[in-house]
Amino acid sequence: MIIYNITFKVDHESVEAWIEWQKQIHIPEMIATGCFYDHRFYELLEHEEEDGKTFVIQFYVNSKNDYDHYLKNFAPELKQKSAAKWNDHVISFRTLLQHVQ
Image 1 (spheres, rainbow, N blue to C red):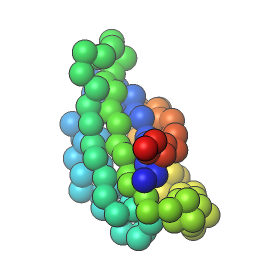
Image 2 (tube, one colour; image 1 turned 90 degrees about the vertical axis):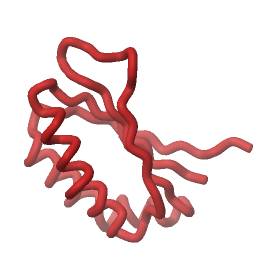
Image 3 (cartoon, rainbow, N blue to C red; image 1 turned 180 degrees about the vertical axis):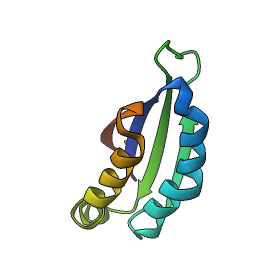
């Protein structure tokens, strides 16, 4: 199993609107690419900082080829839309994980 893991730091003023945007707009757009078959949305506990809350969204991918297809065909537009919407209210970093058996 491969997981596309995105960690977000969201400023306190934007948290509620950002969560709703993720649930209603962004996550459905990610799933609609056909590159991911499921997702999980987490809030880090015991980690709140003065400058915001931390969240993780994990998208489950069947293969590295599906992930590469996402990067080539969908990632630039979706990242740009997110950056335009949230500007410096949200910072993020991405990692690719593989399940170890």
